[in-house]
Figure (cartoon, helix red, strand yellow):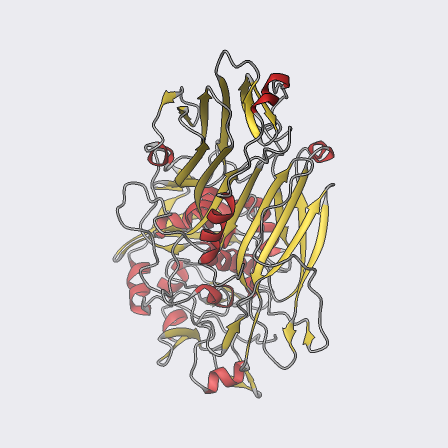
Amino acid sequence: MIWQNRSGFIHKLAAVVSVVLLVGSTSAALQAQEVTRTPVLLQDVRVVCDRAPDCSSLRSLVESVTRQCQTDDERAIALYNVCRYLIYHHAYPTERKPISALKLIHVYGWALCGGEHTVLGALFEAAGYRWRYRGWSDPGHTTIEVFYGDRWHWLDTFLKFYTWAPDPRAPRGWTIASQEDIKANPDLITKAIVFDEARKVWYFRHNPFTIRGGQAQWTAPALLVCGDSPDGILSGVRSSRNAGSPRGWGSIVFDDPSYSAAVNLRPGYRLDLTWDKEPDGWYFGTSKNPPHHTCGDKDYRNCPVIGPILEPYGGTERRRTWSNGRLIFAPDLKNEDCLSGLEDVDNVAVRNGQIVLVDESRPGRVVIPMESPYVVAKAVLTVEPGPVELELSREGEPFRPISLEAFSDAVRGIYSYRLRLTFTHALNRLEVISVLQHNQEALPYLAPGRNRISVSVTNPEVLRRYRLVITYAYCPGWRERTPEEIYQAGAEIARAHFARWIEQPVVVRKVVDRVPCEFEILIPTPRGKQPVYPRMLFLRRELLTAGQQPAEVPTPPSEPTVGPEEELRELPTPWLLGALPPGDLRQ
């Protein structure tokens, strides 16, 4: 089969899992022994790339993006930068109960000002800092400040702004200003930033996107990228009031003990998380409109921090929306152990490619559990031959009868369910697909150069019997022009100008039989070209029974190497960009 494009991946998955298994002999049921195995669950299957934020927890996120920081200002800017990457501004997501910062990061990736700054505040707390909310009345706005060095500091991920104030006690003589600093001295804004007419963004006067010493300062941080103005900031800080330190704002809160970002896998299950979306694959509470960044790509097309990571996905839509994944239970019915992850298996065995009844005088029953850190947007159940009796338990509720047609709508908007099937005949095929909504920015993407992948689980003893397989698929690329040529052409640094990505993906597959497990993925750049982030396609986790083959991939797996006309080149660590105060332009 030919891999044609990224959007085709979802459709290809559907085609792969729709293969009908061969019908075995019904006489095998006479000799079948009932499945009585204790359900198997591989817990917290964690995949981390050292070049991407580790979003497993708030603490791991803080540690992964601040590991190179030397000062409090650098740590604050790193957390500000990663929040701008993880969340874009759009109306608040809503659920029956408040949404934690970690859930917002993994499931949604969008919020308004109070929600964005709740995530930033939660990260400040995880980093060991005090915080406080500040409320503006003109214009209406909720923001936050962090305390270190015996003073407050203001960074605004919604407006995409911070500025510097002189401080002789700071390591470099400057520190990030507070709103009170700006109120007392408006020159910290009016004389500190300059407007780029061509790109319609603001830069620090001491660090604009220009050419100095023959080199383009393309890593200069872009400010107020979505169209806000310095006058609006000055008006806001004049009306700013201390709003205290509550552990949340509106529907977004710091933490929720009932939510975990851990991925748990049962035998015969696989989780595919893609950097793409399916039609109607979104969940946004009662909203009838899909989520999207209303400012298009303004937030990243001129931003050297988040722009290079996001530009491979701009396409024609040029805005951040949502991404999808699929949690799939598709047991290999040639394997007697394929139902070992199920609950409450009664009067059932697996023989010769069928799920058969041990005692044909009474019905068989299986309970299929589905659970993930990501919200279900829609679902598909396939059982052949039918009919079967269906019952559904939503997030621990009692089982209730349900029709096949009502199944998808019934599981939309939840994170776990159990599906009970009762049947009076052998089954040739059983498959459950939950289409999940997630935030691609929380995934462990790959970067140009050397990537170290770490895989861990909580209960590695499960790997003595079952195989964990991790698969990455991506399309490498490069840029034809240097930063200096981009500047001279008046192009934007992160709108895929002069860049291309190959159409045939690279697939890297790793069978994990012990943990901790580490392996490298090398992403070279053609010699003489400029590095770009690869276009990520999917990250797959699957737990296989003995003899079960991994799911199909678009191209044969390989181990990437550096060819004679290639070289390993890296882009700057994004989270520290913008940490240079006035008077310190060392790279």
